[in-house]
Image 1 (tube, helix red, strand yellow):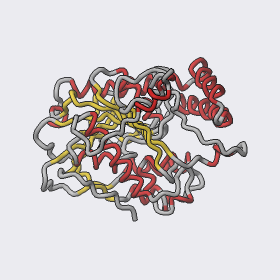
Image 2: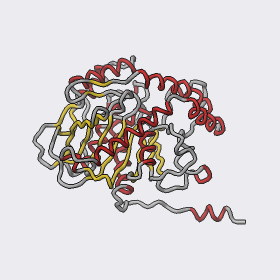
Image 3: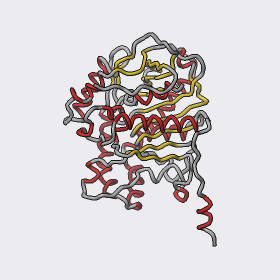
Image 4: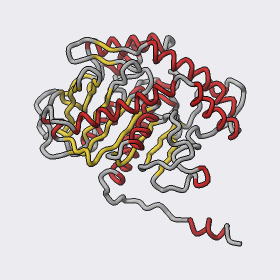
Length: 377
């Protein structure tokens, strides 16, 4: 059995689906009053469960669905469907899933953030992921996105072969922006996330939308959605911060350019098997060209880059909670519940500092005087 970690915040967690027009299907987690009567919902039921199992067969033919994603689908969450909204105005996080994934892929993280007072609205990237509408109809990954993804995966082989050759990786990104199909998709994902924030700032459609405080807005996402989240926060003047969960940045907007907002970039520690296909052992950080000027890379204290030991790419989703995950591709050796709690803790503390403007319990040690000393005539 799988049990999602119990949120550590003081609030109960509500969850509901919201659709803005015909293009923005979202799921929102939010703080709810204590004593909410409705029972917690299952992770995925009905058409949503079937989509998750179909994804397992399509993308992970070596997985036994009954002992992997079916266990996750049947897990009981900590979220109460359509619960009342906690009175007041609450900070907002607009979230994006990863490529060919689903809006609820980080339910454990969403519940933790909502229990601490955030409204988290996760958008379906139309054509790039799958979800079920409230009426039971479904939306799935489309051929246009799959074509762009195939083009990207073919290119990533070249990126991995470049290893620690900085010039080769620099050239790889420039070639991607010149000819890669994924560039336009990345812009679309960014724009869709900003459109969600626009919808939340419009006329209140219900009590949840009315409770959203867009003056305390952040963007977050995983993988391809993490790249889109950083670009959205950089482009949207309302945003205060961005969180990227193990996403390569695919936009040219922050290539050697300073980000407008603070960024938390969490990344995997263990390489995928494919990373060693050429027999090399290079270790490198794929976003080392981004978020700051090249000459000052790594100097900004509000650009926080953290690698979580023992993790692979999919550990930054609820899939890390599957028992025996070490036998599944792109899931690392670290304990899944511990990874989930680490991701939640880092994300929460970062947002408290840069979105809520709370004083942290930690202080970054300043060693800039040594840099100045080393550069003296």
